[in-house]
Amino acid sequence: MPTHLYSKPLNFSNIGKGHDLETQDLGASISQYIELIIFTRYGEHRYNPEFGCEIWDMDFELIRSESIWEEKLRQSLITSIVNFEKRIYDVNVDVHISEINKFYPLRNVSEIKKRVEIVIKGKLNKTGETYVFSTALFLSPLSS
Image 1 (cartoon, rainbow, N blue to C red):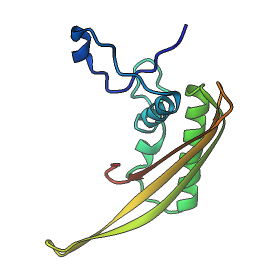
Image 2 (tube, rainbow, N blue to C red; image 1 turned 90 degrees about the vertical axis):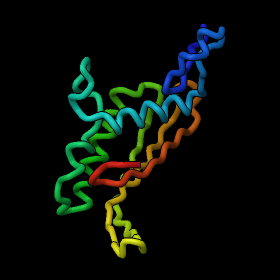
Image 3 (tube, rainbow, N blue to C red; image 1 turned 45 degrees about the vertical axis):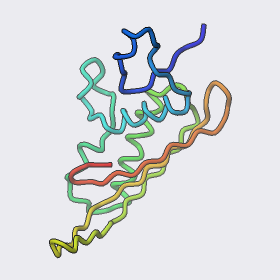
Image 4 (cartoon, rainbow, N blue to C red; image 1 turned 180 degrees about the vertical axis):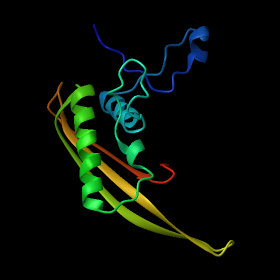
């Protein structure tokens, strides 16, 4: 029996018209689930307080050592992905933090933000194919 992988957000308006919910492929489904892990704070999920990652606790902390900060986030992501995303294996996570300087000429203001690049690689359990997920986030306040 095939498993349906539904796109988020769920759009229920078409069900009343006799249409099915929108589906997606395995890679897109895994990517959405990894995004959910990244954007969920530990303790936020009512039924499993271990679900999520540590980026929310680290977002506003003073970064004294970028390499320690990157490793702490990397370990948090590896633990969560291995524990909760069972459709991939041989998971490797790379985290890199950098500064982005943005100038707003109308206000004559320069703004420096921290940018975190996250690259997750693994293999699909179903086929053994290589899976790659990549995203970049801006810290304080966290945005994408």
